[in-house]
Image (cartoon, rainbow, N blue to C red; front, side, top):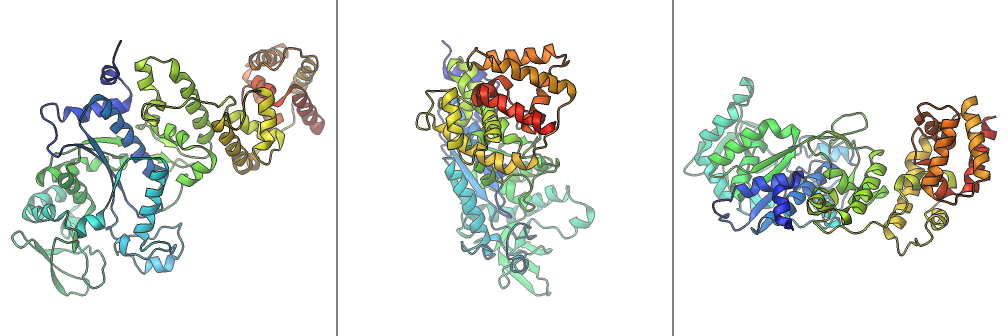
Length: 524
């Protein structure tokens, strides 16, 4: 029998492909630091969004895959660039005027507009950590403010002073001529105003490890680069951090991809070994625009979890990371149902198929069994026709369809029923558009009523589906998709819906008859 490690070494699942690249770094000798370091970065300039979480989720998947193919210990750090100056005020937070007064100050020096934490940076860091903890991620949190001010970055900063010309050679090659005249990789933090200054550097002393500059008023200052008095511009900071920490793997969005040679070059100038990278495609909002922390478009972490489980979000993150994907309300039901389809398939799969199954990566190799005997999409349609105000309004129908199901024995289904009612009321009911049937559709629906009234085939979903299929065929629908579209639009106010036989089995024969009769009478 093929061992799990052997299967993993040949798996085409993208986390294993990435893990094998990381392992290749140490095929000759193990890392001197004693572990393989995975890093994910976070810019706390706005409220965290799902894209931020996705980096940690996906990096964790690669880390878990690595642990199957290697015995080298691993570590994951989440690094917050909270010493960055606040360059613009996020649109979706309170106290806009107060924030404007603090522009260019480090995020950890900007007061928290929500009044809950010592700073805006601390607030956003706490939001990120809260969510990562909710998911049970194993990580260490690093703050750039603490990293710079504690002296942990001092050796690298001194080396950046000594190798300033080499760093600048890399950076200047990437800049327009006008920008080249004023650019420096060092950003001093003004000793009096506390603002991060984007000013020309007059002198870099490689022996004293200081920088000299004029502030906005023309006053000259000389500051040591150590102790958090000076920080690096974000591109040099990226590469310098890799060198300082010995990072082995980091992923980032496609918008960073053109900077990869810069990050790598600076890492190597500062004595480091460039890490393995993974560039993922960006998430898009309803209009196909890139989601942004500062704009607040797209879905937030909390919004997804209002309507679906954490695992369904993990499933969404796993799928095709190198393909741009819409991240909007309508992706949630699909993600929930596909996740449970994969859970149900997992127990019967061989080792290779299990390693290619998203649920292996979502659950670190030990996915639970699915108790979702009713799909989420079906629960949404049930909420539509049942007028349920809470999940208890759905359970009467669920028990008749699946007599052995209970909230206690089926906690995933119970949670999904609550989510379904909430999702329907917030995002389906306001968008429903019912229409009257055509004469042809009316005749077919009357035929369906007649067959249901004499139906003696029980509540088997497949048998009912075959019967509904036959009604459409007998009434001349070609393609048959038009028949099912008519049922959805006339009865449910939507252009798409569940397998209608399964819907009848769940909702009930008599109830479905009354539903169709009401729709036909209303449209008469």
